[in-house]
Amino acid sequence: MGVLILYNSNINKYEVMRLKKESKRYVNIKFLDVMKLDIPFDLELFRDYKVVFFYTRTLGRDSYILASELEGIGKIVINKNFGVFQHLDKTLMYMILSKHGVRIPKFVKIYNIKSIRGVLKLGFPLVVKHVSKHRGTHVRLIKSKEELKTFVRNAKRKISSYLFQEYIDYNYDLRVIFIGNNVVGVMKRVISGDFRANISRGGVGSCFEIDNKIKEITMLVARSLKMQVGSIDILIDKNGNYYVIDAHNIFQFKGFERYTKINVANEIIKYLKSLI
Picture 1 (cartoon, rainbow, N blue to C red):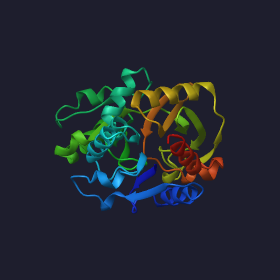
Picture 2: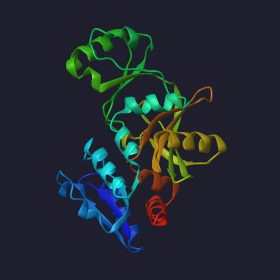
Picture 3: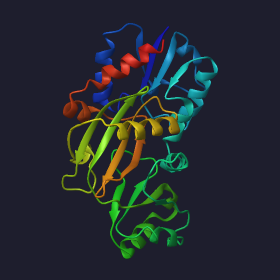
């Protein structure tokens, strides 16, 4: 029995290339482009594999269906079906994290463009982000009531696709990658010409020491979201408070490998093989 990694050949090309390269050190690791799958899913395609790793969100909510079917026939799914499903919408993720005592920025989601009273309570500036987009895309800073009204008016019926968050003043944030019960490494990301610190948005990275607080927060997030392989972003404000601003079951690690010198791809492959 082997490991099957689901991916999309058009997305995260660097990461997929790295996973394929590192997988050559091992036996019985195969890759399947999800663009070749049809619904209903042919479970015979998964017969020879004990572990299935979802490294794609291309299937959308159908990922939940496939993951559930695979677990139903005894496969080990990474991340588990709930972990695969919930990251399609940040709203659910934030609600779960808050329920489990994880500190997150205050947020508001509205369904009617006339219901901005709750958003105004967040104060200005505030951050607006799309509920299902990642890598800092569809994220903007709103600095005034007039700017907010313009955004809401332009969004119209799509307003429920956005979350409004309080803005946390900070100098840097941390990208933490965890695999199994271990924190693999931490990358510090410093703002560079933008309020976002994403490496893909021009942020500058460096290696950061793992401490007990980072481990504690990371493992709490992993348990809360039922994730075995993933990354989280921790923002540290001017007073030293830690806020979890995002969690990812599908994450880029090109910048992480470059700045930390950690072989993330091999760590993932080793973990998947250990489950057989």
